[in-house]
Amino acid sequence: MSGVSQAIDQREFRNCLGRFATGVTVVTYRGEDGGRYGITMNSFTSVSLDPPLILVAIDRRTKAYGKLPGRPFAVNILSSDQEDLAYHFAGKPREGLDIPWVEGALAPRLGGVLATIVCTPWQTYDGGDHVLYLGEVQEFQYRDGDPLVFYRGKMTSLSLDESSSASAFPSKR
Image 1 (cartoon, rainbow, N blue to C red):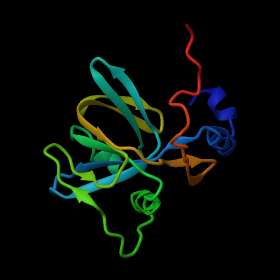
Image 2: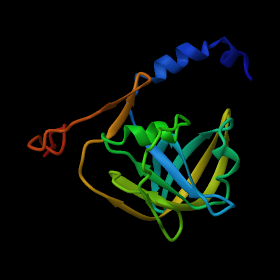
Image 3: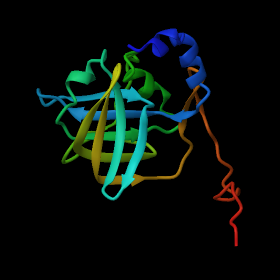
Image 4: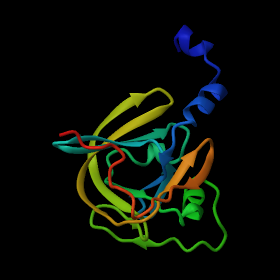
């Protein structure tokens, strides 16, 4: 660890990063045993359109860290009514929760989500206490709805007025 990193208070740094609102995803995959697994994460971003690539970052301390390498996976973008799923796959199981699994050719998915992006492994990179997995998009689907959002350490939702303009920025002509 560099001297600069050691000088930064990790809790305060997390608080700072918490000011950036993110969507909530569950990354799902099939394990060596053929079982369906998932992990909640908000470290997800698009990387490239050509080829179509996305990135997820997984903490090295999680169970999924050692199970995901080399496996196809699906990024499931959760809707505002799926907070229980987010907590379940974040290691806080909900008693009696019915997981809406959907079988896929490459990876299992979750039903009722706003979007699903199915990927094959592209590249893996060191990211400090995380590992960065790039996936090449093989298929995707999406629907309209309100997203589940993570902000300042809490789940919330973002509701868009259907009558509002599609763009917050006026076009320049």
